[in-house]
Length: 149
Image (cartoon, rainbow, N blue to C red):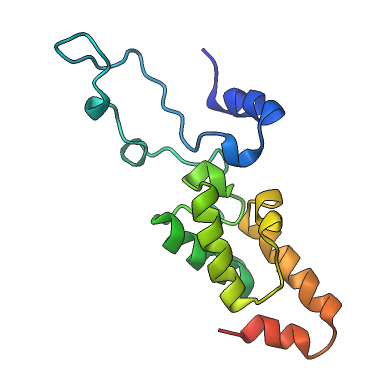
């Protein structure tokens, strides 16, 4: 019996994060319709089986992480966004990432590039990039970045 983390690991060696499926559901057999074909409507929905990320949920620990978590929740439509969760493992895809990027850019204009979100797909890493950019910008700017709404 192969574990979901093993599947993710194998795929991660071949594919970028955003191409790895968000959900994996192990089934004993596929539900079939009367014509002996897979009954797609009878397949379990990922949200109903409690599947998400392979890491424990850790809530935001500072203002930047909280703002990012709020953005993720609005874009993903769920409350699974912990600071260590991978965006793509909890229902994100490239289009949702672009929506998140646009919302992040409204709060922290010009601080992150879209590639930063693909390369750093956790709230913790994105918050760190924002904080590093604020500290490089010098005194006064860090306050502006931290409180702009």
